[in-house]
Length: 288
Image (cartoon, rainbow, N blue to C red):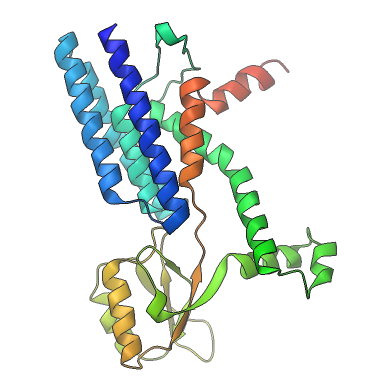
């Protein structure tokens, strides 16, 4: 009974922290590190308590292994621009608190278990539920910016490839003053010829990557290499470069999709129902 009570506390704390993370992500597009690190610490501490109470090392060992594996996998997906660095830390924190499947008898919670760690079910659920969030997010930007007001032809042929590209470029990209740059923003291609810029940016271990350009007018361009966005040091460097007239006053950024709400819903689904992928296989494919 004590073990199950601790399980319940772990679930409640994880859900509450995920709600706060979603709030911060929607409001400021950043999930505070203190939030994620506090949840990681709670996960290690609570599972250590479980190991002491049950006299079984499996809880703290599973917590540590799940934390490590989840971090490696989600970090690799971060490098592939799937989500941001804050999302990686939140997935890792969830994996630390809840390393394996849930079975709470007195609440009648018996979610569909999987052969992989619980956090992977959260990852899969989050990806599956993120599509409706993305559609709503893009629709909100379309109506907010009124991009079809002067382009009625795009509205009529909304599923045309040209229209889709137009929607993407019009809603998910913004030209902003460099003075308004913030940590975590994703910088689009910035073209230049001044090789001094290369020297300045390569002196920073950050997210901006420099490439050779195929454009006839420019030799190089830099952009964010992952969804994690630029670091605080890069923000500072770009603003200094702008103040010295090395780069222009404006820069194009990509609006990042707040993925943390999808993580929250993926977590809730994993806790109550289980792994959506296995549920689909069980209830759809195996029936057919």
